[in-house]
Length: 198
Image (cartoon, rainbow, N blue to C red; front, side):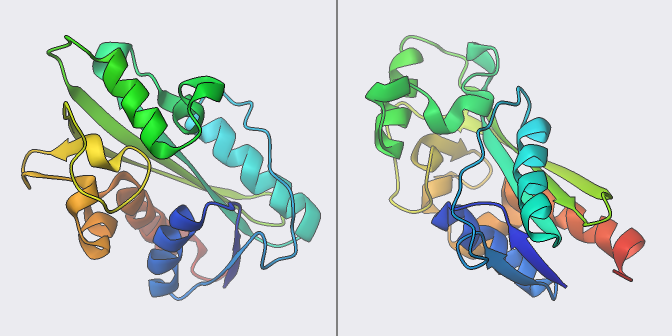
């Protein structure tokens, strides 16, 4: 089945496309579908934002769309940056490095380094049906970045059982272990059970 991915984030597109293509889906990005817009993410949960993005694409194209909303939740910061992960630090933080540096500054002197990545995936069909899947990836925040792979907060997100940060993992490892990888595996199970005939 052809799905339009409601995202212009090239790194997120790469991760999602690798897994969805392996499931037998053809995946087109918004740009490849001729869509040139950014949905305002006004939701206060990952689910609300993913639904907003997928619904916007379905409404314009009449085709099935899939969207991911994800972010980092830090226990000591009451779940921040959460849905604001991509904009954390406001106008002063323009890059991934700016944002994770700002986060590390917010965590100065904090001993509780527990954090998790959360991904919520929503697929909406033209007839209005939805499929929702979620994944979490638990780890700890380092005191300084480590590794040069991945994107976002990956260089400061440490996975104790692997003794590496998310930025040090291969794309295959990350796709298997990450919040997004787990959400997509749940998506795959639901698809095979409920929507295999679509």
